[in-house]
Image (cartoon, rainbow, N blue to C red; front, side):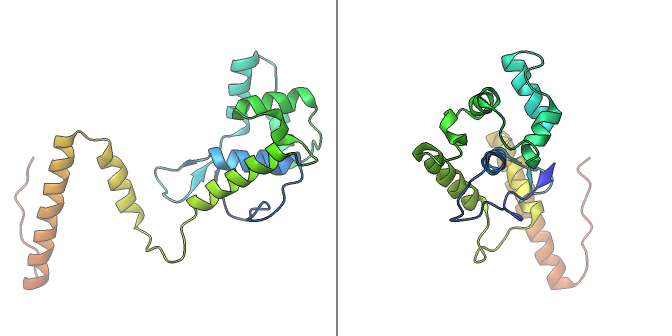
Amino acid sequence: MTADPHAQDPVGENAQVRTFQDVLGLLLKAQAKEDPNKPGEFIELTNTEIADAINNRFGAGTITNEHIRRLRNGTVKNPGLEVASILADFFGLPLDVFKATGSETSRKVVEEVQRFLESRRPTQSEDPEPPEIRVLARTTRRLSPAGQARVARYAEQVAQLEAMESETGSFPVVPSTD
């Protein structure tokens, strides 16, 4: 499921999280990973991925992807102590994080997660990089230092070619490196 972790967020800045569904949704948004093919978009874990991870940890049949779906969409309003405890453990958080009356722990965790999600959101003043640049930077970071130097040299050569093109209005023939 690809989603912007901030789009139509019912748990926006300064909002009070009141339901199990709200807290669960917020925690899942915080765990969403950036889509490498679509920078700025995030991929949340699927219901099946969550159920599989829990079942691997606690034993087959602990929870189903259908039960996760019902928790996420709010069909199940009160999951019970055992399921809430398992989910809290899944996130590495204390059970209080899901406390409906809003414990101090829950309030602090929710505020911290909201700050984290807010930090992911680009501000209006930022000049967003084109997605191709972010993909190039992310890919280049995975290279060895020698590979990174090679990419920098290639980029410099492309800049020189573009400068020549703009001066002459023509495209120079570049010998193949194959």
